[in-house]
Amino acid sequence: MNFDSFLFARNIFSSYSCTKKRLITGGAYNLRELLTNVLSLPDLDLQLTPSGEVTKQIGEALPVSCTISSSRNATVFWIKDNTRMQTSPSFSSLQYQDAGNYICATTLQEVEGLQKRKTLKLIVEGKPQIKMTKKTNTNKMSKTIVCHVEGFPKPAVQWTVTGSGSIINKTEETKYVNGKFSSKIVIAPEENVTLTCIAENQLERTVTSLNVSAISIPEYDEPEDRNDDNSEKVNDQAKLIVGIVVGLLLAALVAGVVYWLYVKKSKTASKHVDKDLGNIEENKKLEENNHKSET
Image (cartoon, rainbow, N blue to C red; front, side, top):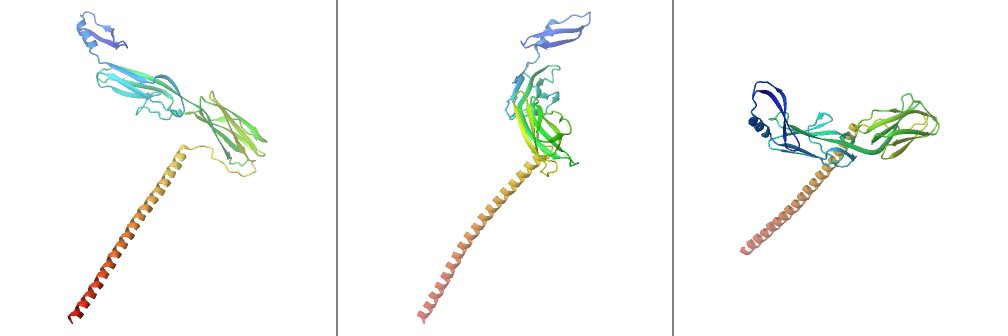
């Protein structure tokens, strides 16, 4: 055949089309050879369950399966938000960071350009969750109150203050990442005050309050930032302590069993010794009696 190239595409009805890209005049086409090449392309199909846009609640499970049908060995891989994943996604308890655009794709290495892909847009929703913390600033003249918020869609945050105290700055918010952000204000309380943080999205309205002592009254200051690494360290330490306690209990149990066996063995040995001593004394008496009889 005297041509440069053809582009072959298979549609969903298992039929084929041939699109001419560029031809060199002066040659004849071998239609039989062309059809043979087209019809010899391997089968390749892909099914993604679920697919399209899926909305779930935080903490729920979502089984995901991506199956292929191919007459030859095919390679399957996953992409999330334009980044190739190392493993297939698994959602036993959905978190906000699991949300994103997923693509399951399959290719045949021996057939360049033959590829199938299906998409899953995962949305993870959750009601607003609030945790408030307070911290006395280094100048000892003001306190920083932080409202840590989780939820999706992003909750709107409002503050209210009950009592006498001037708000030094406007509300500041951190960047909203993986369903989490913080809102904070700086206040100089002249007396004990109550600050209320209100977070609301389409799912729910959540309200949490925090009592703050006057700046002249010493009080326990909570850390402003929650550190997941510290939480993991605390959990690891707790696991270590539990392991040590269990180990000590097992050691005590083993020691008790060993001691019991030792005592039991000692008593048995003592009985044998007493019995042997009794036999010796009886033998002596018998010998003495025999000796007297002979005399």
